[in-house]
Image (cartoon, rainbow, N blue to C red):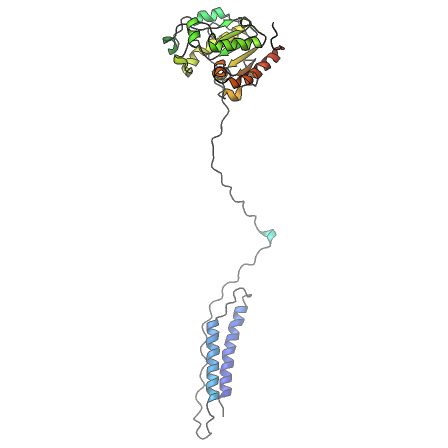
Length: 321
């Protein structure tokens, strides 16, 4: 008899093992279908090799046929790995909890933001001023006396208080005296003063029609800028002068006059040409005449500023009175 049936039976058992393995994998819904290709190849190769070997041998005679050998047990199948728990079914979109929005990163600040200038509180009682009464310029000048309130007194020749009409409708406020002003005790009498006189006359005024004064009353050494303590010492007298004159409008000449009266550190180049207000009085910032002597091209802008003041008073260029 031929051993082909036994071999076919063994091959059938191998293929059955393979089929069971595939069915086990398939039970997981196909999500984790992982066929052990190596195992399948080994099983298929072993069965085919045995089948070829059996069919290649000549069939022995019945007399010489040995006693049938005990049936070889099929090769032991590899232990099946434990089944992984089926994955949790996906919830419908409507049931999903909304994901929190991603936190936005704050961009680092690239530049400093300029805060608006905060006004400084006004000083206490004004010198020479009685509460509820309008002071006079003479009273304020007497209160100023031989002023020793700051270090500018050490190098001065004269206190430069102010000049002009004590009841003027228009006041010009400058920065401080120069060498000529210090020598004469009168504001704006040097080269810058001559230009200011021309500006006043072009507006339809005479110099005696207006009042002229400065923030500081003594000349800073070498015409340097006034320092904060010097401005603080003189400022009450400037405010008292304006209280005494009570003008309808003020022209602030240069940054120190404008910044002191307005409590605003904005550069004069940005502040000029726009009406502001000082204690209920209209104020027009513009360039200082000394600056215009150094920068003649800016005279046009200064003239535009003064024309706004003229329009406020209803005046035409060259008109007197």
